[in-house]
Image (tube, rainbow over all chains, first blue to last red):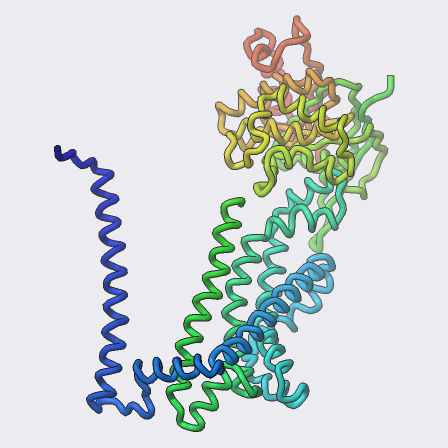
Length: 265
Length: 251
């Protein structure tokens, strides 16, 4: 027997159908882009030597997987990205806490932070090479310099916006500044800290690639710049593709963390 | 008998770049242990300043203040921390003062049970109604066994109906626990329904213009029962007149 559909069931069906259609169109768009890229190079509309092509990328990727060089470059870039991300997160949390603790210091340093934050940090990279040398230290410091000032400003502003009344509660209950930090400022800022981490993970990757462009012997950024210099565009395209996947994966990890934590807040 | 709280000529002045604002002007009063005092007055008359001075949050006042410690303080909003369970919120003060021991926890649990919060101890504040949240805030305050309780318009964030209910609840709980209390409010009916003494504060700078003892034929009436008594309206009218006279003098 056929059951009558309730309006809610109709709504859910409609919603699901729409979601499915969106996914379908996204898939079709991606496939047709790849198809025309491949066709274009095969038919000679596009120059495969400088545009590469999906099939050439697959072949290159397979070869680099076999000799292990792909994982080597990915490993280097990931290590640098995660390293600088961790350093940025810890450093900006500590500095923001110190600035919250000593308001006068925050007022003194404010214009300097604003200046450093609005400066295009890639301009600093050449100086860093001269100071620190052509090595991984330079790359990590470049990545840190890109994200750390904005991160500090964000966190400190968030700390200062925590309600005065909640801090008063801690003082009424007999607590001091350490208690305020431990019971109010830090737990009350968890959503802010995670959203700042979300921005930082993306910026770390940008910083690491810029750093690798200028000072590296390995890594995906190095592969891109070296590949373009020796006209191995297959390397360049492959590296960009891998970067897309890494960026999405890192962002996904933090988003999952955000959802997990969100359940408890 | 020793007073639970005594203020003698307490004055307080706020400083800013544009000048000084005198908020309290020689306020004197005292309350006995177990007494419930309400302070009423127009908004901006320095009621909250007065509580902050008593609580020791504002230290640069003039005059003499004698107060029994520890002091408990309840806010307009309950200030429960959203990221802690009700139980964790309630023991926050004990945690900060490092007084978590069996005796105190047993007392907290007994209070949670008595005030209908025990089943919700693992819930988070947002899962509770406004009234329950305010009760949890009260248990958090009482967990430190205060000798003196300060209430800063503790019901003003609630809607009218919940407000009556919660003020009845909280008023009864405070009576049961025999704690000396100072409540600041702009709701005259609330003051008459809960207090043993009402002080009327003038416009800024706040001075006490009237002190009134509230007593009903039966001593143990709950706030709700008081509202039904005939005398209730008489007290209300008297305080109302006092405030209006002060207003008239002002203009």
